Length: 107
Image (cartoon, rainbow, N blue to C red; front, side, top):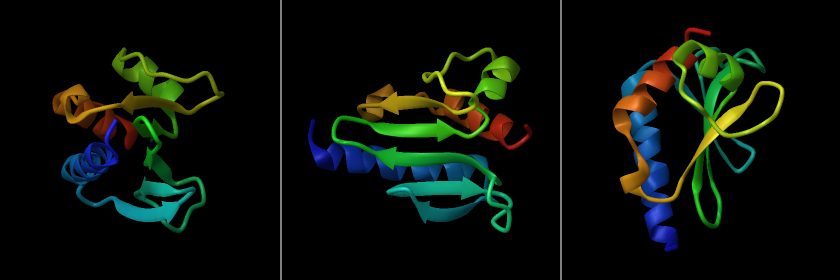
């Protein structure tokens, strides 16, 4: 996997998040970027984007509730967090991602 392609995926995901949630603010943290509507609150983030060696991860803070609200299955087994791993731009379904992002701000 070419790092340039993953960087492009990372950048495209950031655009999708800001298109879906225009008033979201970005915070660089944990080696990626977190998106929040409440920057003054430690737990105000609704999603994050993280680039790894073989994929880019779109992580949802309230992923369990998001799965219940949308019926869309996400990856992960933690108490709350769930994610989607994306290996190429072709893997991105922008309509589904925008649905998840908007819904994640309503939880």
